[in-house]
Amino acid sequence: MINWPIYETKRQFLGRMPKDQDILHTIENFCKTENIEMATFSLIGAVSKVSYGYYDQRLKEYTSFSKEGSYEIVNCTGNVSQLNGSPFVHAHIMVADHLGRTTGGHLFSDTLIFAGEIELKELIGDIQKRENDIETGLKLWT
Image 1 (cartoon, helix red, strand yellow):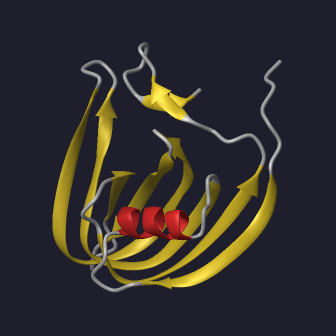
Image 2 (image 1 turned 60 degrees about the vertical axis):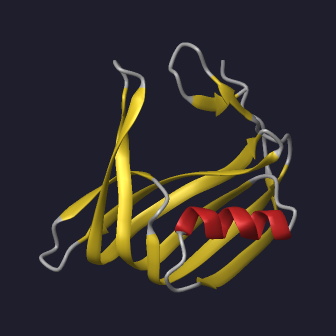
Image 3 (image 1 turned 90 degrees about the vertical axis):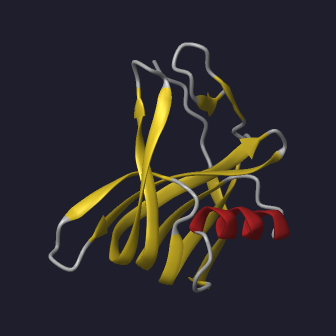
């Protein structure tokens, strides 16, 4: 039987993302300012540049892609936990181009907001910390 911890929402934030700013850095900086150690979030809007990728399980490394242009965020969700004592954002994104073609994957920095709205829920409970996992090569919750 899996014994997952239970969390409650402490605070819930709704906000507008700043134009031309990186999604990951914006969320990490907000969490530092607000002393948020654990959270989940959902983001809607559009980006002028998107950086995304996937994790090659065999090679144990990320491959990333960047595209500039007008892209609608179809879905962007993630969480905030701790890595080396600082907030760490892990997120995935799916975007659509002007023809409705979608692409996405693991979200990387330099994904720049054109316009965006975020819902971020700060969580109360055991703080999840990320550490290197030898088996997968990823920074996973301990």
